[in-house]
Picture 1 (tube, rainbow, N blue to C red):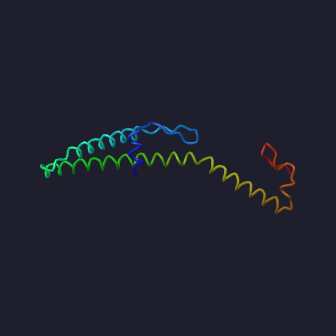
Picture 2 (cartoon, rainbow, N blue to C red):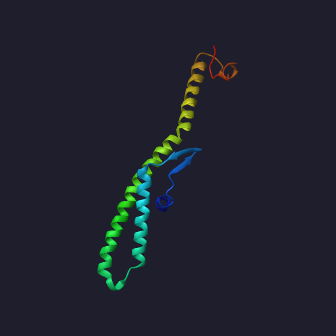
Length: 133
């Protein structure tokens, strides 16, 4: 998931969704910084890899890879959790619209079951949103 590493590298403290600003926690920001630093350390180690000192480099590489893996896991947990919270909040408008539509359908069924033609009712589309009988 290169997006995870990209987000850690960019380290933006906030995100805009549907025009609303969502601020990441310090946990996300700090874990992102740690992940990116760990990535730089791993990249530098790989660029210095020397086949003559293979055993020593292999041990060091295992340590650095372990650190990178831990940093990645920590950041991903914080980041993905907060993205899920943001997504849920951003969806609230759709969720509310669905609930309102379900209520409107229930009102329509109720009126139709009482013999009223919903669409010819002059008060059905009243701006106040109230049905007047």
